[in-house]
Length: 239
Ligand SMILES: COC(=O)COc1cccc(COC(=O)c2cn[nH]c2)c1
Image (cartoon, rainbow, N blue to C red; front, side):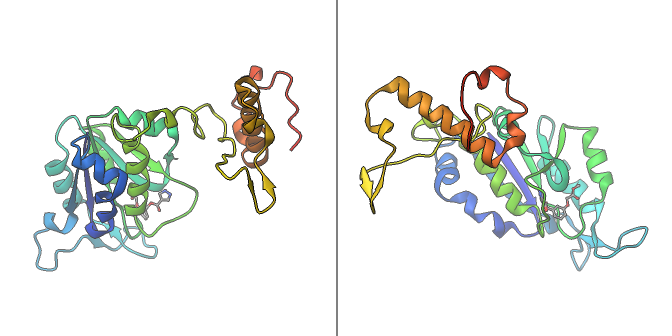
């Protein structure tokens, strides 16, 4: 997979060279390229923003540099992702969908945002997703890109040491993951739940499912509404 990122703060994307994503890049599974938006300006001050039409506080990113950057960086066949508080939610399902794409381009907005005509124009050339990583406002899209690239990269074949860990994790089966424990069996007088030491695989599976349901009911009751009724059969969900 090739990933291009356009930003006025390209150094913000340096962490993509580290750890998991860095290894994926080194192994050739992922090819990440970061571009400076100002390289697509032609005025003396390399300006990328201007005052908002219609008034209002702050500045808006000008269409010309973005249009040139995206036409240069994102030829046919790429999918454009624009992080924005006004976007559709970024979910594990969307991460899995993006992991199947050959090319992704991320546009990092700053200030009050990018002139909307850039997005409208790009939609005529390629698929465009305006995506939110959460209901809060950041100073720019760069951090959201780090989040999304990591969530996507870890799904790529060969990136995770143990791909089995992708099966039982939060949001894969619609539930939150059960609590996990390691040695020692007793730590600071706190025992690991005995069922996990019992060696009864079926009991362990059931306990973990119950804990997932309990944790989901406590932290994310909204997720329970989406589950098929069969998910609950005879379970007691007392939290
Ligand atoms: C058309 O899209 C745009 O103009 C995007 O413009 C901006 C402006 C300010 C900040 C951001 C970064 O995204 C978030 O804050 C964000 C994403 N998820 N949750 C919060 C993006």
